[in-house]
Image 1 (cartoon, helix red, strand yellow):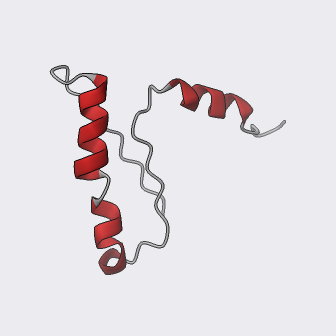
Image 2: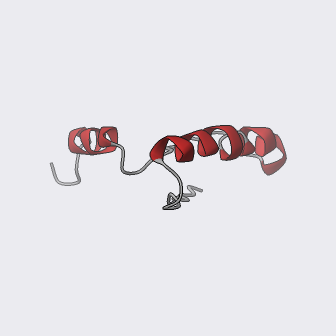
Length: 65
C-alpha cells in the first residue's frame, strides 16, 4: 500500500518554520510507530513546492517513453 499525505503550510508560518515543524514534529512519527503499524519502508517529502521536485519529475521515465 502506498499512502500519500500532502501537508500545506499555514500562511502564518514561514517556509523555514514549516520545515522545522515537519522535521521535528511530524517526521519522527512514522519511524516511531513503524513496527506497530508493520511499515516496512517510508519515504517522506517535506515540501511539495521545493524546486528539487520539479527537477526529479523531469528526469523520471514517463509511460510510453
